[in-house]
Image (cartoon, rainbow, N blue to C red; front, side, top):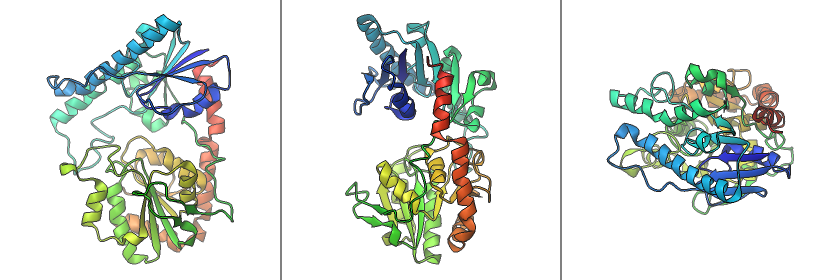
Length: 410
């Protein structure tokens, strides 16, 4: 079969699929992307770049849609060249609908099966943008948000089938499209993300001289609290977490905190004056920085060691896309203290396979962390059920064949 994947990043959510599909030498696989760096054996990258940025004269509501159109135009031109010069005509197109790369694919390849990865649909009510009372919406923001979905709606209308990774994320899309949408998570490699052996070395070597300048021996720490996110922003509860850490340090003098992620905003809005959420936390909070360890992003083996050393893993999120890191930490057998928000509640039952807490209640976050640290033996069953949840429902070995079957790979 001839297969076309489209995503501005590479390989993004499609990594496991690509690794499986390239095992068949009869498959011809093209990946259209912005990203020049990185490669996978057996995958041909078709790099495309929009011709320009959206015009400043374009109506503010339409900026996102114009960006999607420019992206779609660039992808169209790049793949038209492959079609005309190399005779490439895919049997299946699989694209992330959050950007515009696939806007015109059904026009370029009308006989191809067009599949959409449907990660998120923006709503003004009952989801992420109206979650924080400190960030109110006005009429202008609501109108702009509705138009922000325009590119996704065009792709949803033209695709043959769509897939959402969780039921919560599927529910964000208009009900009129639900019949097109299936739910399969990308899957967690539970053989890799597993509890440590008794003699495992829980040492994190420095990988970034700025973010992680010193070797961390986590096995020498009596109490370890962990936090993982792509960035440090309000969507993933970084301000609430750091406020809880400041209070926790006063009450638990032997507790260390390990934070993985870049000092940037991955989701949500930037703070004014160019300040990052990490900089604000360090400026405003009384923290013992000898017991707070910022590692930056780590290679998977190092990341695994951090999770294996965790006594409490804190995962806070707006009602938004569920992070892989929460499921990965559960697969390792972490005691996850999660926010009482819909994406987390789809997976975690309080007191069964994790603990839940109000996203904004810093004192309660602290209290529940202490509850775990003071009673580690009582938490063992919860840890075991956390791993079993992922093994039963989110195991890559089970979900990958279902994902391929959904794609109708021959």
